[in-house]
Image (cartoon, rainbow, N blue to C red; front, side, top):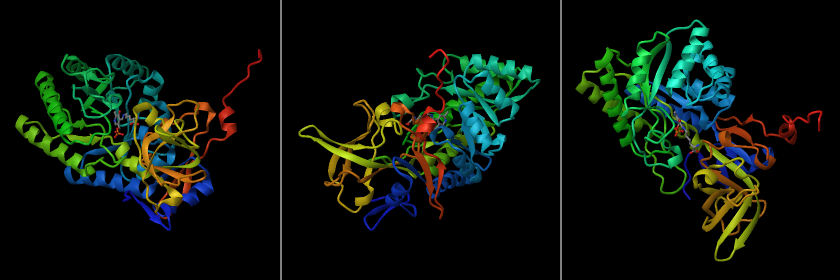
Length: 437
Ligand code: LLP
């Protein structure tokens, strides 16, 4: 098997950057999330570099929902990336890690008063407004705090259907996010924001969806944006200086996935927009992108210990590992597929088709179907699942009271824990037994 993304095979073992996966499993235990710092930084630089080339005033905001902890905040900030946060918890984590507030934008379709207050008090870069109730809520907070001209963008729902899983499409008409353009509500919201000095309407936003391999939907989005911005200018003279294209750039999970060069998304967006701006005599806005998966996805590998192999003749073979939907719910949620490598038999032929199952008490608890592993896979082997850097750790749970695994950072000549493994005591630490029991 040809390995990419900083993975290699030496003496029969899988290496992640300069770290022997088997040694990591031995030292830190399994399940274990391993993140390759080199690869994360490389991806940050690809995007930041493309932005510097095509739109130097543009912003790359890492979508922290993909992989969030204080160490990741440090890495993103040190590469010149801002951050997209979507809850008080993400905002708090970023601020605690020392990310400057003017590098943070707040998303969400139901921001609480507390979250809005935290954003306003800290003077974050932008709030991306999702709906009319939120406009009222921000106004109420701003008045209470005697604040005006809060910098905002509005999230648009233009009705674009991207070729990706239904659960992660976010710009089609039947979707909870943003203001509908076709019905006129987006324009109504924009006009309201422009006429109220509580707000400074700086830009428009749309996130089409996630794990998108085509460039074309982003060019289509440019047209929706310019049409909308031009109509707003005609209505009240307001010129928007920022167009925010969200994230969604696709990554490699299994054979057959053919991701684009990251810089190509930036190139296609800026080129298309420049032409459209000329056509409409509109000043070229700065662009923002909010990539999550494409920064961290391929940098992550999860290591498991195989507990047993169960062959059901004529049906399938299950390889059971010591993790499951509590550390990676993506197969259970979306039917996602992954590539496996047996870390201690990495140089052997991987030609046996198996289903990798977790240890939770339900049949749907699978890590992936149709993985290829060595024919002699057996108990105590270390099984590596690739491309688990995005939406695994951040979507982990304590289902069946399993502890969330540790995250170890490797690469760049260093190795260290960035999130500690949850202990049994962590698991009971929030439990209370009231007096009446
Ligand atoms: N911006 C906004 C407003 C978003 O909602 C998202 C992702 C992103 C940016 C980043 O998208 P990315 O570059 O990571 O594709 N849990 C799902 C993915 C959900 C994506 C949610 N929003 C999964 O595991 O596939």
